[in-house]
Amino acid sequence: MSKLSGSQIVSCFISELNIGSNTEVTRQTSISRNVFNVVNKKEALIYVKGRACEPYNWGVTKNVVDRLMSQPIQWFVVLLYDSQNTGYLLSGQDVEAYIAGVWPLGADGDYKPSTGTYLENNSPFNSIDMFLDQLKE
Image 1 (cartoon, rainbow, N blue to C red):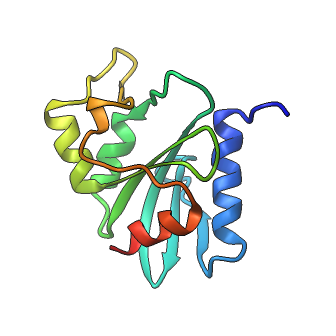
Image 2 (cartoon, one colour):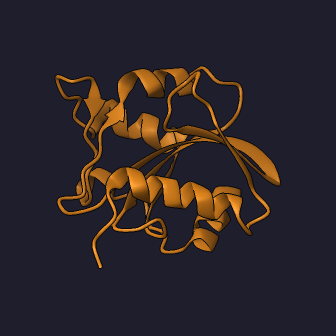
């Protein structure tokens, strides 16, 4: 079985959220094609990035983070790896702390988080249900 690409992992994740989890997900293209409005008991924005293979490092775009910081609702960054069921959920506060002194900013305008010390304050989730539980906290 061939592995999914990072963008396919994101698509599968969003599809799975929409099907069977009593969650409504809509794309927020005014911010980024990778940002979605999620309604499940509460409303939040999620910025979703996917990686299909090691090394697990993502490009979290500074301009998108800046736009999220200006939003009136809670926001999160979701860093998926290997499948739509595995990843990290980072609150806006987590991201702000990481960009203040942990994540390097690349010349391309992306922060460069990766597994290990760049995400040491967060535990990964390994199912959509676990993701939703973390989102509700």
